[in-house]
Length: 166
Image (cartoon, rainbow, N blue to C red; front, side):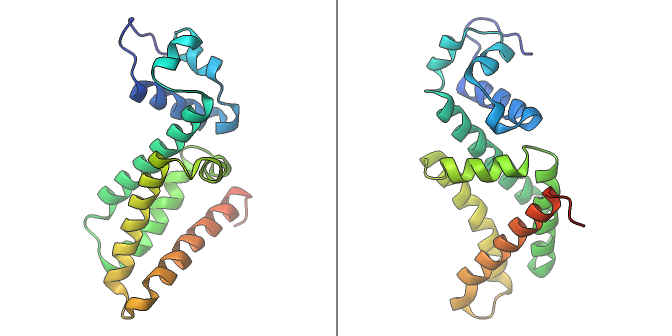
């Protein structure tokens, strides 16, 4: 539980706390009242920073994707080509196992993927994978298909890991 002085709350603090709660309990169990309680504020106080629980959840998923993309950029700095692609996949899978549950992430992307904030963050993540794929592709016309194949491969592996497949 976070204890804040009056006036020290911000959208960033609200979403960071919401992401923390979603990582612990799952996105579906994240509630407006529970979030307010964890911030030691009245639920109506949150309306200054977020519109409703859908705004909170879409913000949480966007924050999650933004953190993942930032971490990937940092992780991949010393690598290039196929090694960077392999590292991307490994880091992506391992980091999602230590944060918000995979099923919640997919549900959040499906439900809130149209929101401008989440679209922007997903675009940054895709640009990172496209940049790597472009560096090792010899056929420019295949870059988009290779990127989709790569991301589908990662998502498929995450699904298998989530259900406990070796």
